[in-house]
Length: 445
Figure: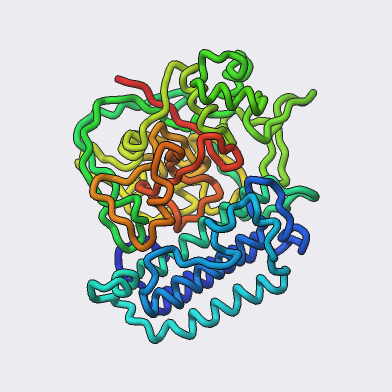
């Protein structure tokens, strides 16, 4: 079912989508013990029990309270599940629910949401806050995407899991690279001109993706692929982590403080370089994109390679803009919703795939893997677009605007189909490496 079609959802469609989202959340956590759920596996991540309770509480606030009254002008979360009152660093000290309690909580909220669905005017006609929430199914899509995004957060935690490795419920085998794909390191040229960035969609897009606006771009070159492990190994072997000339001042301070020498989850032994994804540790595949690098590492690599990081506008133009037609696409390949044929998404593989494996996912410009595989750092700070309007609450986007956060684009192998599109903007601190993040370089014409 297409989540991103710009129209209202029927009651039956809402039920189907909510059931599917919850089934995936429960599948990802089904094999975890009570200790696994309540443990803080890494100081950067929440105990998974908190994530699950937060998913239920967010659904309660928006699909019961707000959908029926439209009262809140803020995120509206309270108690232990308010992320601003209780940052990740203290969540292991909270009175977290047991495995049975959190599953009961998820079920009780869902039952009440479905019971109240028939009384909602799903056409959402009107200018008041409640009507704007219900218009074109926005509030339901928002809640669905919230759960999808927490699925990826949970998987980030499970990548860091203490104790026995997480046994990933893999559904597919990775594809082989396409024989006609470009070689790693190839670049494509964007001719420049006026492009449309962002969207005016109010059925699915978050407020930080709006409004659509024109931007004048100079010509530039951008990598056809995200940087591969093989390319990044060359940077490591060339002493890239020991040479301060490749690093910004802030990046070098961080690298030195943390003693960084390789991407996270790389190890070296008599067997050569190894890389771990969940429960699977394998010899480093030179054709797969480098993953688990922070912004500072991405920036240093780009400088070493004689390139730079793209701005997020350049990234979106390379992913979305069709120069021949003079219009933007919803996805690199067009308007068809994502599937396993287009990109490595939706946590079906639980690992990255070799670049050049998805010819049907190529952008009009000739860029591969713009969606899926790894998030890609851009040089842009996270800020609102010209004409930005907060809706429906400031704590999703507005609270994070500023120089502290860098924008990532594209999604990873762990990003659900329903939470990815060319206009989607992710952001994080430039020091973060637990996320499934990589790099795609650009250079001036």
